[in-house]
Image (cartoon, rainbow, N blue to C red; front, side, top):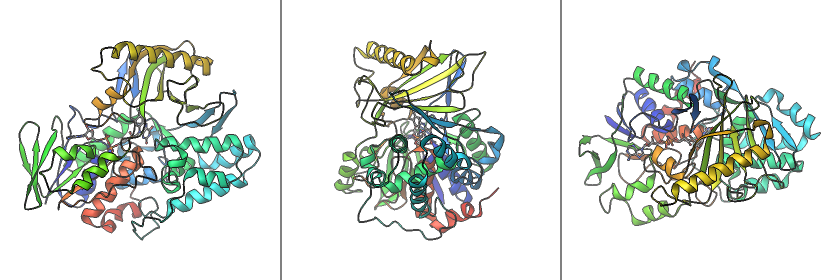
Length: 474
Ligand SMILES: Cc1cc2nc3c(=O)[nH]c(=O)nc-3n(C[C@H](O)[C@H](O)[C@H](O)COP(=O)(O)OP(=O)(O)OC[C@H]3O[C@@H](n4cnc5c(N)ncnc54)[C@H](O)[C@@H]3O)c2cc1C
């Protein structure tokens, strides 16, 4: 059977590998000029910067992401030597600083040392673990696949409020909602657990950054006989008698296929499918779903090594505040480093920004970008004086992100999967047409990868797809 996968992000590449494992014929299409644009790095002033991957949970051996990359035949091209453990630091505006270590073996003792209590924290970890272990896509011992929609969704704030965690520790754990781009009150505890528990197990970056993952996937795809066809934008679907026949590319080329898996933003679908294939309610639902926040990023350099081996969350006086965007006096910022060159260290900082505040086509775009870049540099130098002086090299706005990930709305993680917006089903009314990626299930490398596995499961049977993950292929 011929299959077309649209989009070569981690979801699309995972799908292509899973389909190849099912002995399927696969073509992987990508709109951008080169594969996996979000995972690729770029250089400024000889320093290498990453966009869509800085660190992940569960990448170390026995972690869930590690296990999946093994099962896909990708990990052998990354190798354990590329693992770079990173600790997470949380700086409050009061100057109090705390950290979480990169491995679970040191987690409880680090919490004990800094907060002098572990009972409520251990209770939280147990609850998170239980939540995560429900899913067969996260836990190889769980054999039952269900798509149960719970009657009452418990939010992260509800759970954390019910535990007697020390104030700062609670704020730190709330900050993990950033992995989903959500406020704690709108984040389901189950989604939170799935994405954040792996970070409690291990948190690591990779030598070579996102490009290491991208290149390893490309080698595994080559082994599987799949090539990525770049500069190939899906324009519409060919449908006859309510069955998928193939796809049409922007250059007019038609490709026939029996199945198509789409990993771009689902808002593109309205213009892609003939009328009446999907009900208006389907489009209305997708179009009414909120997006995750928009981000403003700076890429800079410092002479200081103090960002090595860590990521830093700059929190406000009150702790974690998702709504403290770049316009505020004390925005919440995520800061990370990367490999140095000749004593020069990269600095990447990400702040939330009000939705589409200024577009590339606006007359004052350049002035606006300059103003916010300088604001972010000055703020960083105030909150982290050890990094000063910081030299700005470049910046990225929501318009930049829209350009990087073709057709997206320029938000950080696409559609916001809040407890109001339940995940979208990967299977559709159109026989042979499936969806996957961060917009369908959950964001992050793990969220997008799992969404690909769930989507492939709908096409081929979940047990078939989970077989290798359960065996934990080395
Ligand atoms: C600034 C930033 C930092 C991040 N940091 C981390 C991190 O440290 N750790 C982590 O785990 N996650 C991180 N993430 C999130 C993570 O990168 C994403 O959730 C994940 O990569 C999404 O993968 P995807 O395959 O769903 O989507 P994408 O990577 O967006 O892939 C979709 C692909 O489809 C292509 N496409 C779209 N429409 C079409 C079309 N019509 N025709 C052909 N191709 C099309 C796009 O060009 C794109 O390549 C970060 C994201 C951002 C933006």
